[in-house]
Length: 254
Image (cartoon, rainbow, N blue to C red; front, top):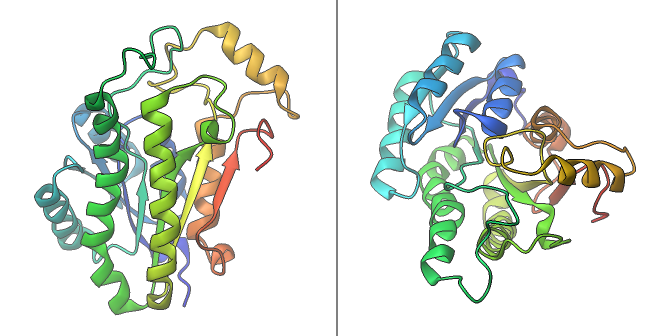
């Protein structure tokens, strides 16, 4: 079974700004009903929903909280119908600044769990909350957001990269279990994006170095990464599951 994007109801986590906002905008442009999830960025999320029109709405929920995720899904269902699609983009507070990153000698387990709670626990909460509705209709699309850093840890962000690697494993095992229900699960892994809140602290020289290292000779934008999400949720991606698509201008050949 396939559904055109215009017939889908999509939850995008962490969609108030940055890549999440670009994904929400791309989906809305294709006619989907889009639930813009936010944790603290209320003003940005509500402003984006107002701009994108009456088929979008902002919904507050901390995806680390199982009860909050169940409430989110219930509220989205009341507003737009049963969610057909989830894009798990939410990122715990983080800055891509290699000089300020915690080094191995200073890294705490709290640093690790802070990343794991959003990336991994958040994904588990979402999958468990939407699975029954997707299985009942025989259609579901789940897209997680990863990173090219576990192929090429040019800057060793230990906590962030480890959490995203764990998320890739869950993406693949979930794809194996959910496939018989008509649910695909895939990952889109960007590199450094120009520019999001998380990459705003990145020195300009790093952007220049990344651009010079890619075959396309430029840094990928949030809008370009969002295009890859559209592929996975569209009918064009109907036979693709358990995959990790790297969208970084060719910096990493996966």
